[in-house]
Amino acid sequence: MAISPAVSPRLNRDSLARLKSAGAKFISISLDGLYLSHEKIRGVSGVFARTIEAIKDSIVSGLAVQVNTAVMKLNYLELPKIFKLIYDLGVRVWEVFFFIPIGRGSELLDLYPEEYEAVCNFLYDASQYNVQIRTVECPFIRRVLMERNEGKVYSSKLYENLHKELIELMGEPTSPSTIGQSGTLDGDGIIFIDHRGTIYPGGFLPIPIGNVKTDDIIKVYRESPLLKSIRARSFYGSCNSCKYKWICGGSRARSYAYFGDPLASDPACMLNAKSF
Image (cartoon, rainbow, N blue to C red; front, top):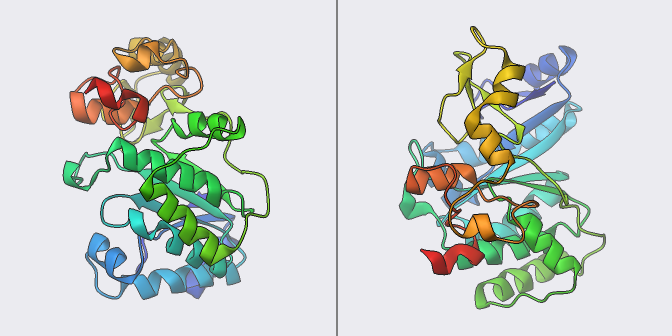
C-alpha cells in the first residue's frame, strides 16, 4: 500500500509509525522547489521546513520515499538543486509532474516546448545517478531517451546551464539511465477513479467515461470509444503522423486542456511546436 499525504503538523513520526504498522510501504511527498518557491507554490508559511522533516521522518519510519515535483515557470531553473537536495536526504525515487493547466492551474505557469525539451534532457542526465526518475504527463521523454541512447546530442543554452549545474553539484554520472523505455498513456495502461466512483482516462483528463457503482470497469476500459481511439493512436495533427507516436503518444490531458480535444496534438512537444 502506498500513501500520498499532505504535509501538516499531523504528519509526524507517530502517525508515520502507525501507517507503517497498518501496512503502508511507500509514501510520496511533494517538494515543488527550494524554500521561497515551494512556500509560494504551496501558499503556507513554514511548509518547506515541515516537508523536509516529513521526508526525514518517513525514512526513519522505514517507509520507501518518493518525492514528487511539479515543473513550472516558478521552479524549473531550480531542478539541479532540488535533485541534489532530495539525493542528500536519501531519496532514490523522483516523480516529476509536467504542468497541466486545469483546476487552479494557470497557463502562465506552463513552460514552452523548448524549455520542456531542455528539462527532459536534464532529467535524462539526472537519471544517471542511481535515482529512479519517472514523469507524469510527459510521454515524449521516451522519445528523448531513445534519441540520447542513440547518441544524439541535444544543445540549447538552458539545457547547457542545467547540465553544468548538475555536474557541479553531483560530479560525473555514475550509472545507466533509470528512465523507462515504455510507459502508460491516459486510457492506455491506466485509468483513474475519483472518490465518487467516476471513471476518467487519467487523473488530469476530466472526461467521465463511466462509474464503478453502475458500470463494469473492465468493460469500460476495453470498450470506451475514447480509450480505444487513444490506444489506436487515432490523433489529429502532428501527433498522428509522428514516427514516435507508439512509444510516446503525447499528453492527452494537455491536449484537452489547451484545445478541448483529448485526441489533438500535445502542444508541449518540440516536434509539434512549429504546428501551433
